[in-house]
Image 1 (tube, rainbow, N blue to C red):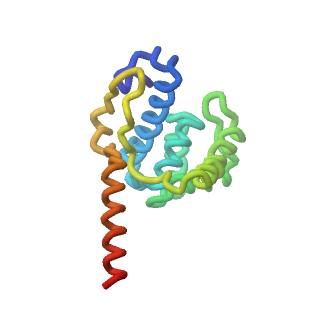
Image 2: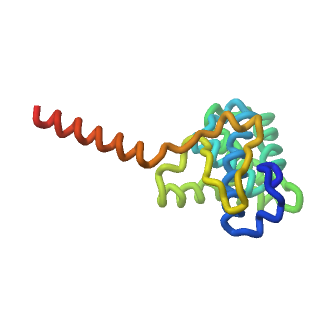
Image 3: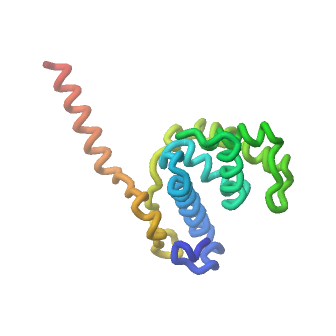
Length: 176
């Protein structure tokens, strides 16, 4: 989807640009889930697991599972991913494109394991989609419908200043 962000498809040939495009796609997918399904709260583990699922079984396949799960009992506010897990465990999965029902089931269930691995590395995997630095391919654009949901990261200098002020306050309070 490089053209979606204003890039020529050849930008995928550059490793850094390819990673940046993948990150943008992942973040966009989280926004699209929250726009398509009001039960999905952007920035939560649920939205990020569903974004990952869209990569694992395809955007269309993941939406098909959501529709089937919704018709089979509804979608839980803030826990749509686990509704899809429950659905595929109860039904044995459904074939999607060239993927067998058992392969779809495995890929859906595996997202929780992948999430746990990510959490072991960094506990800050949740939060809203963020603008990333421009890759070597140049500046990018976010699709207009999704752009309002992206945030700019807080500069490190502001975090350091804020941390210093907090430390000074705590030391002052300790002396008082």
